[in-house]
Length: 218
Image (cartoon, rainbow, N blue to C red; front, side):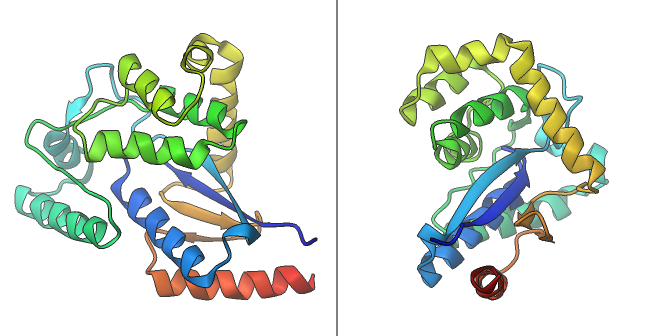
């Protein structure tokens, strides 16, 4: 029995291109019929580690961080909405949308990994934020996400006040930063090679096919 191809996805819950990138990767995996030959693990990255509790209006935030004009932002949102729709994901941008702190979400994603529910929780949180206008920094929203994917909500929420669990996320964040990961999504294959950004499905299929071939002959 060959070992599975390990895929680490360094990303944030509130990163639209991370969602598009994953959905394209997922499509490539499905079209190649290799679901049983790969293993995905999500790695923590905070786009805005210093985001205060109250968050910040998304439009203001993007202008402040990237210097984008309103017109540029609207074009970008349209592009992401269309890309998401093609992949069966709904981006629902609205004027009062706020960028929020995601550290607690990453703590719960680490918890979910032990139960094989990491991808399910990741997609639940991403949908909560982008499709359902929910604040994924709030504990009631996080608790509901845990319940939605069939995890023990009380046990999971207790991790948010556990310093060891919080330090584990910080350690992982630092690990990927020291490797030079400074933009997301960064998708790492067998800890040897990586691609960044939401690559087209065809690119992912090519990369996966080549890697699996090497992997099987190794």
